[in-house]
Image (cartoon, rainbow, N blue to C red):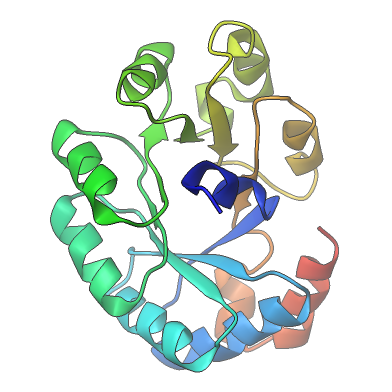
Length: 202
């Protein structure tokens, strides 16, 4: 599977915040039960790398990645922990160079036409559109679809159960990311059946 096709193989990627590493494996198994194999663990907590490591070691069919990658050092630590893909909220020259050399699928963040054009110059054709709702949302993506024909997006930020299908109807959207499938409140409560139910609805 090419790195670009990697992103179209699952239309919704859960964006997950783990506060207790003991929750990582049962959360991943709850998602897997609903057919969700690709999971993004954000590096927003001190235990995120531990969570990635546990899922990678204990949930064999899960494809666990790391989000909120802000530097090459973040990316190196995430890959060492077992991350199979990397996601960043934005793009810097250093980070893009690291991504291209990393050997794993990556989603660099982008919120403007100029940023998307810079990615295209670097032969990067799939980007995270973040924060989606605050950056123009569906209207923005529709407006640039005829201009940046070779660039596709994974919108995140403000994506939820009520609007994610409208994003997926746009030709230049290959997938979406969102936290509504496995929200922190349900993870902390250990509501694994409810997470499976939410994931089964996508």
